[in-house]
Image (cartoon, rainbow, N blue to C red; front, top):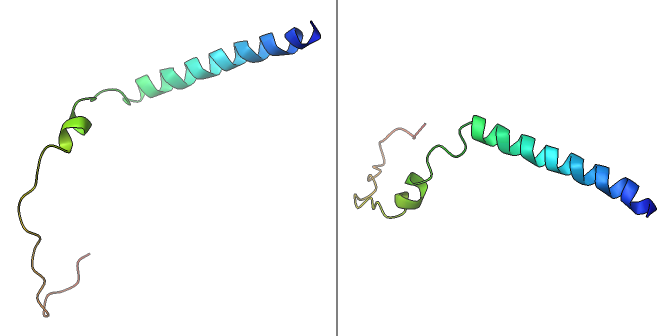
Length: 60
């Protein structure tokens, strides 16, 4: 019974903490675009990489 006096307030604090983190993620735009990352792997870039010549300056 004594453990409930500790566990109940800790679980309430955990629920509020998780709710606050979820609110911050939604407010920060974390879930604005859920489709593009899943489709990005399907969009192929078939262009060959640029050819480096010996006299070219180094890439920044």
